[in-house]
Length: 286
Image 1 (cartoon, rainbow, N blue to C red):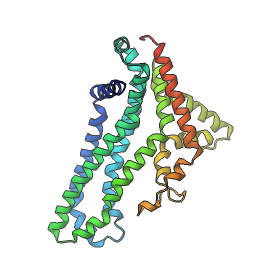
Image 2: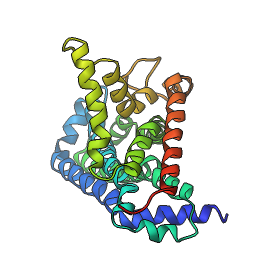
Image 3: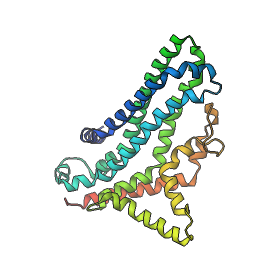
Image 4: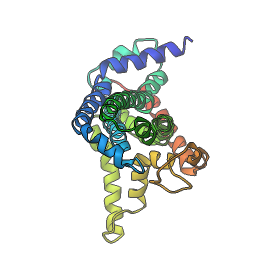
């Protein structure tokens, strides 16, 4: 318990100091809800002509996607400043004076983009879904269309099970990406974004020239897959991506966990975090 409390309060400190972690998803979701309210008066017609329900489920997918997308960008910029800002504003000396280990500090900062931010996005998306469901039920019910047909097409229970599953798998898949951003934050003296992106852009440029001007080489595919491939792998059906999931039996987490790239990524991500701890123990303010 004594070891958990410093970690818990370190995470809470990050949330206190970085309000964009929850304000940004809320602001984006408010815009999505406004658009949904404006277009919701077409719901009765959509229910009447719906066959697969894809059109009815689309606003819910947009609400979840918007929350996760903005959370991704917020998490990236948070990670790039997480360890760098402590050195730049000289608060590093204050935090080092507290009985909190460098390992606890690094892990608490890694927990924000990998655990806390996805949970915030999930909570915001779920709240938006409930608001949309209540409003849609009112609109469809008052129009006289079939409410059971409307609810059946939405498949919200399945969605609310699949979203947490996908977030967990994506967080594990993104560990090396997050670890790299934190490592740059711990090592760079300035321009963390440039140091985080520049080396990979340089490698992809060299690869592009070596391939005779052909895009999509191995390095570019690896970088893109590591950043954006977590959800695709989590929701792949029999190895095929972008397949509509109608039941939980179609989801195969063992295929995801059996991917060598998954375990290799965990090892690389852990090495990056270990390097962050090592650097923080030896650093002084900028």
